[in-house]
Length: 313
Ligand SMILES: [Mn+2]
Image (tube, rainbow, N blue to C red; front, side):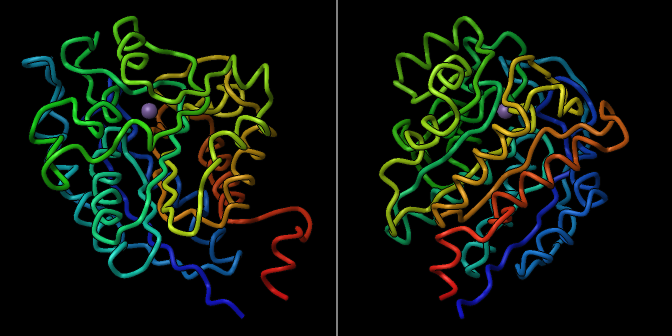
C-alpha cells in the first residue's frame, strides 16, 4: 500500500497584478466549490493553511512600466516562503490565487527547491496568454502578464531574485499550452527566447492527446512537475469567471484529457490555480469546473485505469 499524497492549500487573496478586480476572491470561491473535500474523497491528505496576508490593492497607474510593483513583490515573498515550507515538509503545495503574478513566488520556490535537491523541473503553463511581457513591451504594466518572463530572468530585480540569485527558470523548462492571445512585442520575445508553445492552432491540428504527449515527453523519476493553471486557459463557454476571457479555448473534454494525461505521469509535485474571478462568474460555476479538473489532475478517472491497477497490485 503506497502512502497517500499530502497536499496543502495556500490562499493568496489578491488581484494586485491584474487589470480587473476580483481574482482576490478566488481562494474562497474554490473552497466554497469543495476543493478540499473533493481531494479528500480521492484519498489525499489535505491541509488548508488558510490565506496569506499582504498589502491592499492601491489601484494606481503604472510607474516605470509596472503597476503595483511593491505590492506584487510583497505578496510574492509571502507566497514564496509558504510554498517553500510545504515543499521542504514533503507536501504538494496548491496555490489558490489570486492573479497569475503569484506564480513568480510559487515557481520561484519550486525552482529553488529543485536546485537544492538536484531535481529536474518541468513547468506546464496552462493559459490563454503567454504571460511573457516585460516593462519595455507591456501594453498595460499589469504584472500578471509578465510572470514567465520574470521567472526566466527578465524583469525587476525585486521579483527576478525573489527565490535566490539569478533566473529561476530556463525557457527550456517551460511548456505553454492553450495559448491564443499574445501581444505584438511579446510575440517577438517568445520567439527570440525559443519558448516551447503549444497554441490553440497546434491543439486544433494535432489534438490534445498528441499535444500533451509532446509537452510531457522526457519526464523521468528525477523530474518535479509543476502545473500553473490559469483558469482562462479554458474556453469561456465553460469558464466565464475570469478577468481576461479569450474565445476559442479547450473544451471541457479537451481540458479533462489534458489533466488526466498529466495525472498519468505520476510526477505532479506542485500546482497553481489562478485568475478565477468570482465577480465575473455565474453562481460559482467556473470554480466548480476548476475543482472537477483538479480532481482529474490528482487521478480521478471514470474507470480503474491500467497504471492504477498496477500501482495498487
Ligand atoms: Mn496567466
